Length: 460
Ligand code: HEM
Image (cartoon, rainbow, N blue to C red; front, side, top):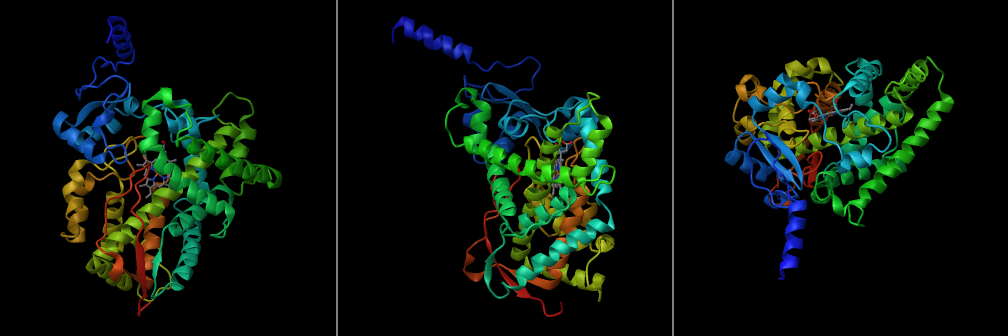
């Protein structure tokens, strides 16, 4: 190579060099342009992140391309950051694919940076969700109505081997849609089909290989690479929400909200142009986040729970015995019985533990819980619920950004799993081979597709 070419290459490398910012924790040495990307399996980086934590400690720096990222692991460090130093650690990264796809016109809540606009929207969101049923009996009825639909569908598959993927997404989507705009959809409705596809595709893409490439190598962003599909899907989702919003505006009676959208529109009327964070674009972003957040997480937790319960049949049986005893002759499960079903609670908690990735922006399954989750079902439920590792478990996170829909999610998970286990036994089909518990990595983790054999329980 000639001297001049060498100088040019050197200059380019210097220009794109990932600089270690001052006062950042230690970490592997980054290379120009790619940072530390070559150290990670971009399809699922969890194991690599854990390996690096063993080498560099519970707080280390990793370069995603030129962008430094501090990885925090371990319950003490996580609590120190998210609770004790909440004001410093409750922000959200900006300029990523997620921001570009979701926050086209307004920041929403999930990805909004820590500040007064986020606080204002979050406070409103909690209030509106409570008004429209969160933690109330009306929500219990809505959930049970949707479960009735699932059980009817499952009854048609009794004795056969069937695929449950999408079923729980559709049920969870209908539950949150009732809160957002008081509508339920048939499971083969175009709206339903679109959103279930959209949630699963975008969840994988945003935190998968192409999402990481988009986030880490900005110079590739305008190329026609597979990540462009995410932008198309978000655009199509927004168009559908605009239709729903337009319909609500026509039929609403101001001051008499029927659902979340009406409530938000009332707030907009009240505020006028007071310069607050309330706008119609913000409403669309918020709807999308609640719909997404309320569907994919809950559905994948149920799917993960069933995968494990099928492969630990003695645990499934103990849950069923507990359910039969506590519900006695009652027709439907009610949330009040939750505290009397420790085995079921523990099993559902575990589903969330298996599901939650360690070490991602949104995640909280500290390694301290690992031994707990890695040795499933060896403890008695009550002692497990009080053991120290259990308290290290934070599937809904902690601190100011704790999940906004936690109480809805808990309600859904309990009622769905109790109703299903009371009526059916789920069996791993004989011809299905060994189960693969490794989840597919994404914004939420999804169990690999599996088939289920459904048996009707005699006593139900
Ligand atoms: C099993 C079900 C669920 C799990 C495991 C889960 C987990 C989480 C986690 C880990 C976070 C991030 C917290 C952080 O950044 O530190 C979060 C945030 C959030 N979740 Fe959930 N979630 C679930 C269900 C729901 C449901 C049903 C809704 C909607 C009603 C929802 C709405 C949200 C929202 C809006 C945020 C953003 C909060 C903020 O940034 O202020 N989630 N969730």
